[in-house]
Length: 436
Image 1 (cartoon, rainbow, N blue to C red):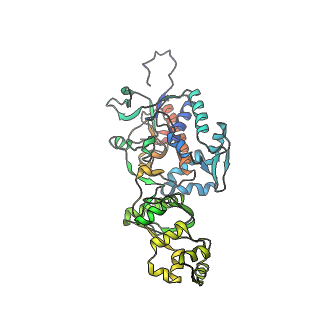
Image 2: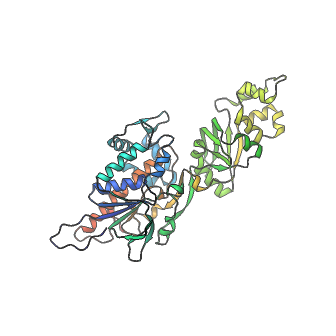
Image 3: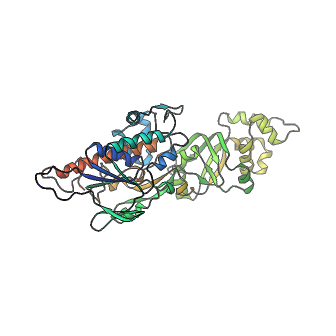
């Protein structure tokens, strides 16, 4: 907070910075700021920090990805050119070294995903928070940010009522719009729009999709995984995307890793065309001819279901999908049935609600910020993390960009603060020589 005016003989006070948001981006920004000599207060609306980080780590804390860096940066799709400079300052290898500095060893899994050796998020977060507190970061929980007062002071709602505080700089790391119960509710969007900041609408990312299942199929197969399948779709630019893996039939439609990997393209297609079609290959390891040969074999007195299970191991949810999506007449034609097994069309109607999504797209547009992530409309206010307008698939890419963005914002805030105290500095000059 800003001190009262000191006498000429007094030492220059350290600059004060508010970091609002206690996820990976906010915590990383706070660390950089504290190491740079700033007085840091970190605010979060929840009772404790890192809640989404901890939940994401329940099934195994996938911290980053070990694929070649040139391929890594392409995962950010349309925003690659904006995210790449952030990652260049803190690439995946540097992130792993930083984690090692917290006493946490990591390993590369069979899919090139990087995990802590114990697969847990909690030990990493505990070690990190201990270091942040030892470094002078002050934490203020149950403080919900409500924008600015007319005099420029930050407003917070607390259990004891509203409080206000003044800082030399502010870093916003408020998350996106998914998992509102963990703090990422997107309520900040209107607060920034009111101040002239260009914010793209938040949309679900890494999400499931609705399908018009019959009640018969839903009641028998909801919650069951479809393993060893391939999915093909075409995006709005006409590019064909093909992925192999597994996903889950849900009560409402489809979800899971294979669907999440295609969700951006599917979501955008639905927005433009009203629906999206994917094509399922239920036997991706088999050629079309081999499938046809097995389907066409005489089955004697066996039922068709028994025949498909015996000859192709098609049973359970895969067999149920065929019954759900293939016309009865096609079951009588081996060629048409075999073709459906290798290319089964499925129509997706709408993305699931954003609060169910793993992450969100949209947010503060990069065009609204300089290269140090400072808002053109609000000098001294920086943004980082998932609240920026980028998206990435699961696999460690989301966390990597959040860590890198927080680090960039923290360094840029220090540079900006230093520029204000430099002789003949312009009050609104921005880092890296840009003007606001």
